[in-house]
Image 1 (tube, one colour):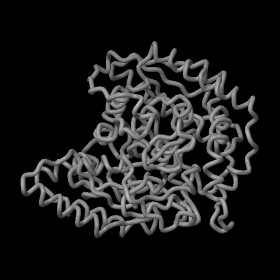
Image 2 (cartoon, helix red, strand yellow; image 1 turned 90 degrees about the vertical axis):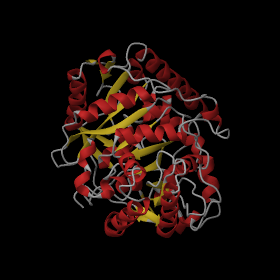
Image 3 (cartoon, helix red, strand yellow; image 1 turned 90 degrees about the horizontal axis):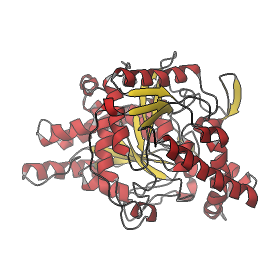
Length: 475
């Protein structure tokens, strides 16, 4: 997304990195930046219900302090004075964190999640919290406590889940950058449905400390969502690294310094099928278009297949594993609570039959085969281009889809994203096309474990030649 796309839209459509520079150069104040976003929230949020808690006075107080610090010549962080938002499953000190459920109504944590603390340490200012499905578990962002979020491109459609409130807020200019979480789809799918960008880093790269639910821990991620690749890169550098509390992050070691690569030295594969389930023709064409664009930039690009994805359907593997590991946390959360506090997703998940012991063991072995298959792929290639979602943003409440002539249930929307959760691989979602109905279409850029900087560079190259002209919705 070219940096000049925001200037005509006002401060609320500036990228985070641009706002930070404007504030550092004293061309604008942090107070002005925060107020511009609060004004935008007041105008647009009633239509899309992306923000569920707004801390305007706290944000303005923090902005005034940020301006005073800059005036006094104090050292400032890379996001000094820049507003940001946070999904409501992520703890924020002294600010409501209600997890999309009446069960947690009024809950106020006494400490920030590690990811939130790191954003604040970089100088960012919290604007508020964004909507999600009950317990962060579904592909739409709606719940009994804070209602349904709507897609700013088309209010009859979903902005996705589970980080759908965050994606809608960023797409509509309510926030320049924010934090979401991802179990199987949840930062990449919503980004695709609203045309923004997001990064699911290697599993454990960003600590999950202070985020609920943690079960199943081995699949959960927290990651940045924004409107430009340079904002993703900046925030990744802020967020990544062990915190001494999350065992997965502590096991990875330090984040390596970025080492720029010549795009012409990279070997990149692209894949639409088989292995992800059915994919709409418009989405498939967008993936091929992205591959062709990289080839035109000088990369070595070719269509590929990954046998492991054909042998073991990652969505089925994921379902057999995560439901068994997730159910105890759900049972504990709803225990003793009245029926009118429990929404359909919790009921659905708890009603699914238990995975047999043998099926669970078989799924564990399948997950290992998928990791081996991707390891073999990345012996030959630097990145992989795939769909994010098989279709553009869909209407609210739809549970069955006909995609490329096949009828599938809504879980199939995760077909191309969930392999990265099962394996822990990093992936970026970014827009590279537009549907016949004018909706965003994103592609997914997958990289080697711990090699986020390569896919960030590939994404930046694609961003520089993107055919998209309408960067944000007219709302």
